[in-house]
Image 1: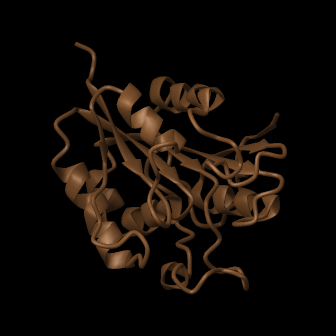
Image 2: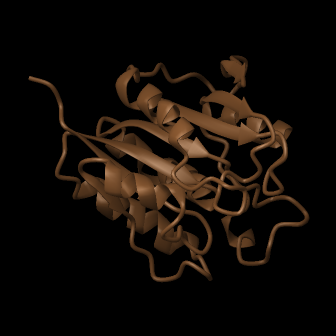
Length: 204
């Protein structure tokens, strides 16, 4: 019997508005839900970590695919450090789009409580999608995060922060990344923190 998959949408700072691809995808995907936090504009790491944990614990499906954007990717890393080992079997995979570098000098004050960013391997398959011109994280920084998290990495050219401002509304092209992590995820082998194994890198 095939397993039932659900999708947990984890927006970034200020949430994802009605024209954001995460909002469009939430309407499109079966068994999809968005985390609920107390503050989108003044994000609190504890609030966001517990919001993710609450929805993972209460998920009505056999497996959950995490769909995170920007600060939401960093929140996933914090959640995985604290609760990932307990719920690794529940998470089928994670799509981590345009992670925000909360450690950069220009990081807004509201994001700085999420620093430092955990550098533990995620205990489930994951794909980081970065951009060559994302102001929230350079291409090299996005690649480094993928390496630390044990994620595969795909670098897109000239797509900005992959949000409404950069022209990504329905982001139909992004659905192929979602299909990849949803359908092809296999149980991962946890490596040591030596980071000697680089993530698979593909550019398009």
